Amino acid sequence: MSTVQPIDLTSAERPRKLAKSRPAERRFDRLVRLVSVPGFRRLQDAHVIVFGVGGVGGYAAEGLARCGVGHLTLVDYDVVCATNLNRQIQALAGNVGKPKAQLLAERIAAINPQCTVRAEIAFYNATTADRLLPLHAPPTFVVDAIDNVTAKLHLLDRCRHNGIAVVSSMGAAGKLDPTQIRVADLFETHTDPLARAIRKALRKNYGWPQASAQGKAAKSGITVVYSMESRRYPLPPDWDAEHGFQCICPPNEADIHQCGHRNLIEGSAVFVTSVFGMTAVSVVVQAIVAELVAPTIAAQPDRFNQQQPSQDAVMALNSVI
Image (tube, rainbow, N blue to C red):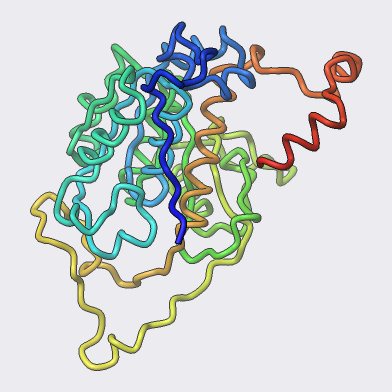
């Protein structure tokens, strides 16, 4: 049986044209070609806080790191549970019982050593808000991937009231079709029961605007990632038959929302939660880069036609993709 020998780029036979200048930045070469050098500088200068680094927020945090965001704060009070292995990026068998935020911070440091990343092992609420989301030094952007409704309401109101840009994840559980994920203003979503509950609670408890007399909802100013797919009711597995649901989460005194306290345990799939997280990343990156992003072919067709590669080059590229 043949074996593949690894290529040693440290040997004397390494390619002579190997780029030596600015190697730390060249790792983001492919992204820079989409967002431009000035746009990438904005990402390097940006500070993004991710609240909740589970199935959605974990992928969002890693995506931001892989996009060169220079400063990240990861806020999560929870530790890895064995049931997280199906969907959370930092969840490995050897990591069960360890803090999610700290594990993800270590992973991000390996991806982008130039990123300043801080793990806050804490639960966001009205008491911790001033420390975790300080108004005297607000972040460039907030990613809300909190699954606790009370905390989520407080965070969204704090961001809106103080003009802090935020993208919020709605319900990713109980979904199987990532092609139905959308981005919209919170007041313009439909089908998603969590978004509906959040809208109602924000209007009732925080005085957010009601629908107009014409029946059209006012804009909330909060961008959300949601799914148009109808939520699926969970099917209990056969191991629940004898004793009912049993929580296997490791003991964590800080976790006041362990699954053993929930009325309903919903199903979730990594191919949905990860797309929720990465969609949130796209919202953040495009908002920060803004007008510096690369033009589309439709916007500048003449420029594209002048730069089209030959047919031979296209065929050669396709052969290695």
